[in-house]
Length: 296
Image (cartoon, rainbow, N blue to C red; front, top):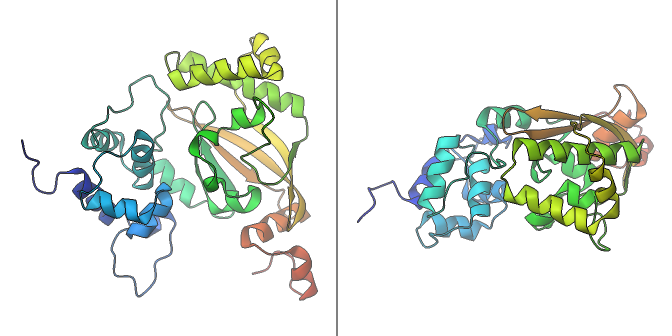
């Protein structure tokens, strides 16, 4: 049995890469750019894989990527659900089943997120697995890309099992009311078990945290069901000093994705610090040069 021309795994990845304009992924478009769509190195960066691996996939020298890699490629290429499932099958994998927690961000949602350049934004799944973040998030909290994907879970980070330090944020983060935030995260996870009762990853997460973290077990025993909607955090950023932000959590559709947006009060010193953190500048240095705080 042979594959129709242009219908194999590598050919489809190349086709989808060519059709996605850089602007849709919030990438700059230079005058000397020859590629109509994404370059291979841009796709590799967005998907969190090496450029060499993208080359091998497109050339047919790598034909069995893991489910994790396929999910990352589908998000980076902004595929529809049907296209994502086709990509899984081309990789000889079973597409995610209905009723399981989705790791797919719909293209329309992705387009909106990439336009939120002035705030820190991240997307988490229903079990608080980090899916996507923008440059503002990395600038404010540190880039999570150096962490293995299995460690990018806010609930595991919040309720560690063992003596591991906090992992998702590189700098210390405190809340206005830590007890309230802890309870909100746990009650949100209980809500997820009602929405995705047969999801094995969610069940494993609840089992691990209940058995290994006393704080989580005590909160879980309360049986509270609710959604985590908002918070107020202070980040001890190494460049801009303490910056206090409002943290709002929006829930997206049936997937129950959590879109977490961090902003500062307009016109406040924290807003200036947030902008400077995004630009990688020290506020003291800006003031010494005579630049108005937050100016370009």
